[in-house]
Length: 201
Image 1 (cartoon, helix red, strand yellow):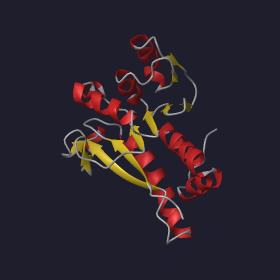
Image 2 (tube, helix red, strand yellow; image 1 turned 90 degrees about the vertical axis):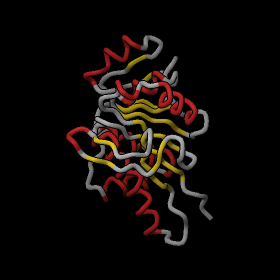
Image 3 (cartoon, rainbow, N blue to C red; image 1 turned 180 degrees about the horizontal axis):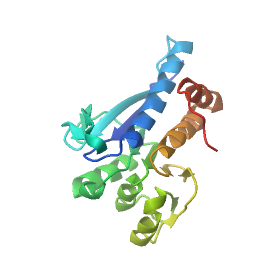
């Protein structure tokens, strides 16, 4: 008998990069849907929720309006937290950073996409670790957080409970990698094929 689904929380905010959050959302929700096809009486491996600071709609980059499922003070317990990138300066507020830090103490994995790494770094989660971000922002991340070894020209960096990815579409590759890490390679390959997505090494 399979266990309860892992809850994947994806944090969204004004000026979040659309593919940064939508790519991981698609990966984990497709993986769950495919699992239900093969084992319809078992719980799916993932349940995906979007979370914003207040729970109110946000305007992503390009003006896409997103209605989150939850607020940071009212959401289910998270097994995975995904922090996407975008214009993150407004998110470097105390309550958001403290919330990310608290989730890191409870979640199995905390992952960032693109400039979401700056929020993880502000929460102290990248101290002494290797990390990556969008190529355009790597030097800035290294300058702001010299305690972090910023790696360029990689799709993602796995440091166990903390995983960071490069920019935008790299979040899809990282999420497929996490599906593989948690469910096995066949599940990740089925998910990529269903999405008609060619995985990058």
